[in-house]
Length: 459
Image (tube, rainbow, N blue to C red; front, top):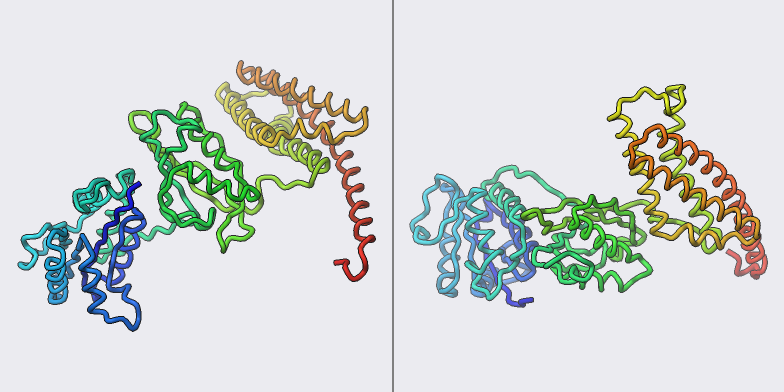
C-alpha cells in the first residue's frame, strides 16, 4: 500500500463559506487516509495566522477555490491564489464557481468546476480519488470508492457550497464496506486479501481509527481480545460466501463487546445491509454494526448452562413457532388442520413462515452445539437415557416436518407440528425439573461458600 500523501488547501471567504469549508474538509478526508485538507478555521490560537496560511499553501499540491457570491470582495482569495501559484507552480488550481456567475478575470484561465452535483462528481471527486489526474501520485487515493458514494458526496458538497439547507445525514454506529471486486472467488481464504473501508473508523467496535485495511488485518485485530467475542468475523465471511453462491444470506446472530475506551459493557451485532453487484457478481458488501442490549447467549457455567440452553431452545420453539402458528390457529378455526379452509397460496405461505422460523432456531442451537453438550448434564442413567430418547424423537419429528414442507403437504405438515407440540411439552417439563435441581444445588454451593468467608471479607 502506498504511503504517498497529498495536501489540499481550500481558499474561501469565511463570511460566506466557513461552515461549508469545515464540512467539506471532513468529508474529503474521510474518503482517503492519504489526503490532508487545510482550512483557515484550523489555525490554532496564538498563532501567526498569515504565516500559518502561507506554510499550508506552500505544502499543498491542490488548491480548491470556492468563489463567494459576486457581491463579496475577492481580494484575499486572489492573494491566496497568487501565493499558491508562486509556491507550487506545478500544483492544480480548482476553482468552484456558482452556476450562471461569471468567472472573475484573475482565475478565468484556470480549471473551473461549476457547483453542480454531476460536475463535482466527474471533475473533482472521481479524478481526486479514483485516478491520479489531480494528485500526480503513483497510485490513486482510493480507487475502490464506489460511484454511489461519490455521487452522494457530490450532492452534499454542492448544497454546502451553494448555501442550501443540505439534507443532514447522521450515521449511528460503525459500518464496513468489504470490496471483493479484485478477488478471483469468494472463500474464507481469498477474503484475506479483500479491501475494507470503514468511513467512520472502528473506534467503538475495535478501538481502531483506521479507515482502510485488508480483511486479514481485521481478523488479526479482532483476535487480539478473544474474550470479547470473535465469531462475528467468521459469520461475516459465511454471509459473503453465501451471497456469492447465490443463496439467501442468513440473519446474523453473533455478538461481541465493544473495545473502545468509551463503550465499556456495550454489545454489538453486525448485519449485512446491502450488496453491490457487477455483471451478476457481488463485488461490495456493506455491513452495519448495531448495538444490542444483551449478548447473543447468556448462561451459567457447566451443566446448569447446558440445561438452560436446551430449555431456552424449547421455549423458543414453543412460543415463537408452535403456539402462534398452531395453537392459536386451531383455537380460531375450531377445526382440525386437515379440514382448514385455506387457499393453496395461504398454505404455502404458512409452511414457509414456520419452516423459516424453525431454521433460525436450529441454526442457533447448532452454532453453540447445544444438543451435544447437554447430554453430559444428566448424571443418572435413567435421566440420560430419557434425554437421549427425547433428542431422537426431536430429530425424527424435525425430519418429518421438513419432508412435509418439501412436498407442500399442508395436512401432514400441521399434523407433524402437533406431534412436535406434544414432544415439546414433555421435553420442557423434563428440562425444567433438571434445571430446578441444578439451581438448588448451585444455591446451596454458593451459601456454603459465603458462610466459609470470614465476616470481614463477606460482601
